[in-house]
Image 1: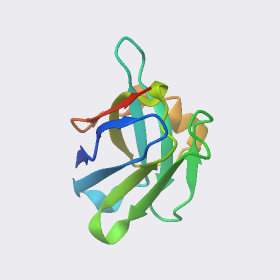
Image 2: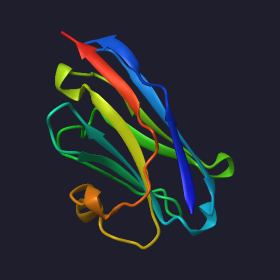
Image 3: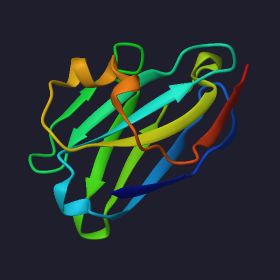
Image 4: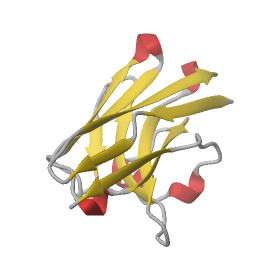
Length: 128
């Protein structure tokens, strides 16, 4: 089992930046990929970005491509989400999730219901 703790959220104005962190513990050796999801009030949870722990390859939702960058530090069991050029529509609770069997990035991001373990999330608020 893997435990996940997100941090780094906050309030910024449109155009600003934030960096989210996700720390994992437990059976981290078995994690194949980590992903960021977000959920705004009244909306469904949506995938944002995926990073594969072995290759470092990433995959992004179209809505954040070119603005968000996901990275990893395997030695620290941490992943990050650098968010630039933030927009009010980026406001949401952000969660990270761990996957143990390889799946294509597009599949991961459209399948939040497949994850059984979530952190507590971190809130991002972007004002216009």
